[in-house]
Length: 280
Picture 1: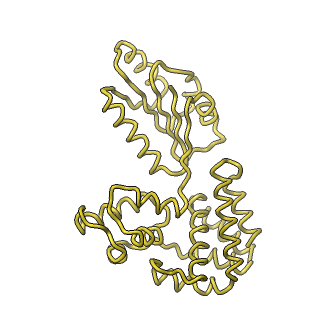
Picture 2: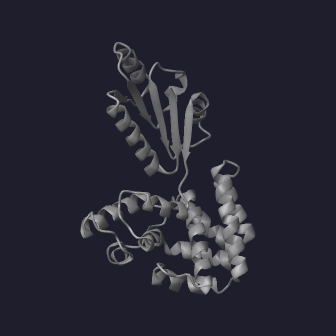
Picture 3: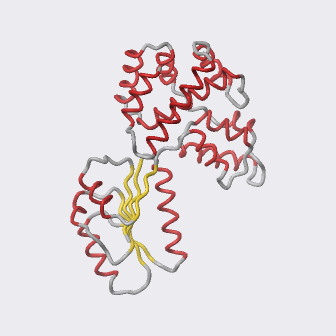
């Protein structure tokens, strides 16, 4: 059985791998982590001498695994932020019995993720965490641990604790890019996006931040600002004033549609940026 996990969301990939390892242990099995194909072949032969359940885990496999075809044991390949054009990615994807892509969650999905964790947290506090930290699950997990330890794990985290204890992860350049988009200054917006990518900002993160920003603009426009940090309202109010409510609803709806098309593999990130600029 060949399993192949990959994507931009390294947090959820590693959580998935952790659960798979725990399941194997709970079933009385063993597993090994290997880094090279030669190491895999040697260990595969040793494993064959025993009958109990075993598995291999290979993180970011190199091209020597192009010679890999199959194994008598369960194998988990996992790629963090892979280049889908690489031969090794295409090879492992083609021979896997099960594959799953972990795309960065949009902000509505992030809120659901927060509410489904082991922590006790109010709906408004979950909204505020998303407003503060976007879709950075590593930062959100650390914040939830910090909040729960502070108030006691049997108590529920409120918006007040989030406001006091969590530092917002705002990017001023995001506001600038959105402002150019809202003013229909496409060349300047495109230049800003290029600067983001040049600095190494992840395309998936940027696109999700654009979705979040337009969601915020829409909420400000219709007066649903509960749980939104005053700093965010102050920065976004002038931009929201540049749009009508109908325009914001249409743009937000199109962004969600693009996000859906991305997740089913019908569009890539550069295309979403292009479409975003065209519809601004």
